Length: 435
Image (cartoon, rainbow, N blue to C red; front, top):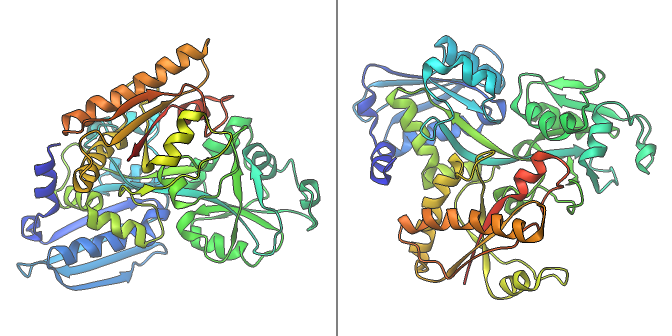
């Protein structure tokens, strides 16, 4: 979508909503509990609405926001936050104008909703922010980290006592989100399914991440997982995947999607959305919307330059970059089985170009570094990683970016294990560095 059109839509006054404007949003509890109402209120304030009020709905985890727009017409937004899958169901039934999801739409849902258009198209699938699924325990638990294989054994019930992990504590109490939750779907896809495991029937299940985290923080034998924004007083464990180092869900690692349990937060729009739904999605993508994403405890997509400490075990070329340049808070990733940039990456091209423009670094100040997974020979891995970087270069060139260097480092510096396809996909990435 042309940048000017996005801007115009973002600034659309509520006058264009006419009728009495009514927007219905359903789906993710992670998004709908606090972030979505905050985005709605932020958009209303930006559009100079008055009498903005927020109240609980008649059912738990539902919210109603009312206001009067700049033309003094009534506006109402209903938010139902019962889990990502419920948003897609509501879209299909015509009960929602926009679906919020903390995981991508799956193949079955995309087929069932085909009458609403291609929900994987860039105009339909909107990444509004980033989150890390945080593995949490009681604050007094001495355990510093776990790997994804250990997590699978714990949450499937094959490891049942803390002593099996080298600490005292007795029986492990499991806490998990319910089956409608995108947080659970993400945990299942990244932790349980790669080990061919299922969640133990003994796990306590929760619709709300906030409630789950509050319970874990008071149970010395507990372990659970929640949205990064809902950790509250619980202790967060570092997570390792394969041979990669253990990582805490720090903002920089979630922003680059290097943290093993990173995930994207989505809005999904039908092919011919209500103007209110399109305007809300565009506001969420705007700098003002992304600031709200960060204020609510999630990770925004605003580009930042950050230093990387040089390490002795870094490849020499990479160590030189770390010594002399800064890394931008974004990784470009690609559609599965394709050399094409995914929907988030296409928007990130615009964000990176705008960052470089404002920083005065459009001309020969940026370096692209491609990475990949092992191939038949190191030379082939290096070639493919360089081709990925070239694909990003072509997109940035359309926005006037002239790069200093484009290089590929093959399968060096993996951020995930290469044993499984999901790890290999995460290792196929392009970093941006600036001088």
